[in-house]
Length: 390
Ligand SMILES: NC(=O)c1ccc[n+]([C@@H]2O[C@H](COP(=O)([O-])OP(=O)(O)OC[C@H]3O[C@@H](n4cnc5c(N)ncnc54)[C@H](OP(=O)(O)O)[C@@H]3O)[C@@H](O)[C@H]2O)c1
Image (cartoon, rainbow, N blue to C red):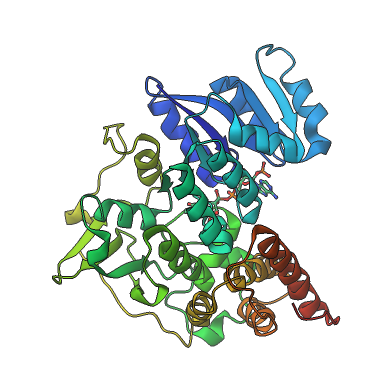
């Protein structure tokens, strides 16, 4: 029995982790669940999976959660920052699934690593912001980080039994998002609703908008750099609208190994939860004859300047990727609130990055400060107020 703690259990990834856990009841036991605001769903999950610990990030919802779980006597209910840390380090957990949206996952990930927990990582922002620190800490503690992101799970699978020193290139596939076939100018006035209509994947709001701008792919370039120790400029993005080939690795001899599957996150999730075992849990099968054709094309860098920004954030290094990520988080929120247009998302990120002087080999405090500065700079760049450079 593997015992798992899930941080972000109420999200798109978190609910799919629980779907997989339900299929594997004889192999997986859920020992802790943590969410941020969705008390209703968290309570429902607690009733179904009976963890020993349930954590709600938003402390104002603590009493409501307690009330909803009054009749369950053997569950400990915690809240706030302390609650997150308890869920990340709960003694009985073998693995912590990190599926929180954005950088709030960073501190709990480090806490879980410090407690020797294996990490199943969906929260790519954690590695983008602090990849050097997280990977170093994991190495020191002998902790494995197993990717959940479908592309990185694919690369991880392609590299099994291979010498990482023989990687020539990582070929990172991208669906192209909601506006893959729409000319750039025609996206100027798109609404959040239109940008949220992803053609192949059903995901949380932030990552769906990031897919439409291709910022998500930019974040994934940096994520791949840290996970697989390959320089960002050897991670090449290829548009593959069918989302069947989840990514590929080209090796020193010219061979390319790919991993294929339906666009269904439960497959990479299951792989991460049971690694290195493969088990039949009845997930739908890929039928290539039904798919018919798989197509690949180069990304249009004029239409998607986000890729250029991601490569330049990676090249600048230090605190710059954290700034790239934080500015994007704020810009996406402003777009979803209809405060800025779709194309303004990239402009906001670009403006904030242009004003940042990165600190190299940053300590955790440097990253947290850069993240906070970038959030304020992104907000003020839209509101027109002045803020000092960092
Ligand atoms: N969705 C996908 O298919 C997919 C694929 C690959 C990678 N990922 C990555 O997985 C992560 C989660 O994505 P998602 O699509 O599952 O997001 P989501 O549906 O928006 O869910 C986010 C989860 O994080 C919690 N959360 C939100 N704000 C928080 C905060 N400030 N502090 C702590 N927790 C907070 C939410 O809790 P409440 O709902 O209770 O507020 C929820 O459980 C992201 O890093 C994303 O890039 C997602």
